[in-house]
Image 1: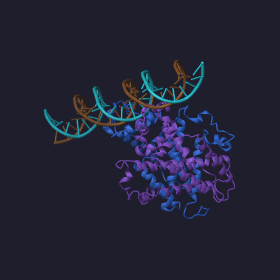
Image 2: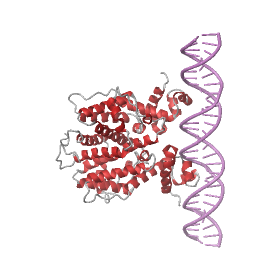
Image 3: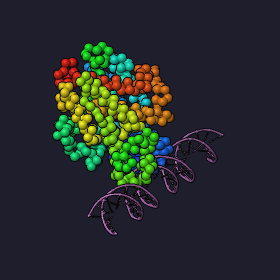
Image 4: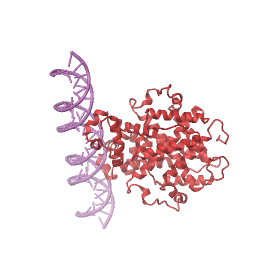
Length: 216
Length: 216
DNA sequence: TGAGAACCTCTAACTAAGTTAGAGATAACC
DNA sequence: GGTTATCTCTAACTTAGTTAGAGGTTCTCA
């Protein structure tokens, strides 16, 4: 396989699952590609450019092949599916959310996705400016949620306080102790989607033809 | 001033504004403290422990002195104020959100804050399990939003595509091009709070005594 | 067809950052 | 007053990002 900056970023993403972001060195990556480290510098300016390329690839992979909502699909269901899909892409790679966080992709399929989201929301009755402010909420929530989830998964057991039984002082903090299981349970998918539905319920109140009691 | 791990983490946070997270080396930090780098290792196991301590301090600083909602204050207003306050704390330090992301603080004032949030939500009519799933949405949104904001602020101008005028192809992506100004305008505070209100509107639909049309 | 240019990879090596070893200094304790 | 605990230092090791510059291959074009 030919060595290109794209192929390098691709290999880097896959190397994440073995070594994690902190373990991803230029030498490790080079070895993965059967090449010496300095070779990579012919293809990329520096490591930051590699990280940017990885984030870009991640964003593109999440956006790839997205289609407009089906006839029988509400915009809410469609957005849930989109967010779940984004999250799954992040989860596919160890530290994926950290890699993607704060990066800007102008990959065609990413911009196309943004356009599609805006169109869907406008069709649903959102003002353009409202749509533009509303949909990033979902993205930011997804990133924030998944960063935390992956941090929890990746933390050394001797560093992660939650590994040692979520012991909160039930005397002083009865509610916190009581829901600790809900907060950090295994079913992160369900927790994530629960939060998503809160956001979408909220967004529904911001449609122009509002029927319900949008606050204020 | 006496050198303690707490003082070191404190100095590290403040050093962020001069050098940023990537520029924060043990040597730079040591110099800031008028000490040699290896000295730091008597107080902390390694750099990761320093980063954890910084995150913990940040969480504590955000939580410090929080009070229960006033009589005349709705739980929604109270949560908005809390999130705004969290965000302001993150913004106080360059790369603050990146430092805080994915860290777990068991600092007393943090746990106390969680307890206070849960109590407030339960008083507002939330089921415990619902409250436990709902409030992290706000935190994750805050982290996600602020990471992106700070990334944009910190990016080199030659690396950041948005620095060069947000040029989207208006032919192929008319909606995106049209709202680019809304998406990446200066008034991030307003954008942040707009998203917050969406979330809170959504949460309002998840109170037990629901009156509105909470979706399914 | 052969010379040169463009393309790509290599070895060697530099710099800087995290970290360890272990010596000394000061203060506390018995 | 000696011993121990506490803290800081210098010296140095290891690893990671990166650069310099020497080949080798392939492509171009006279």
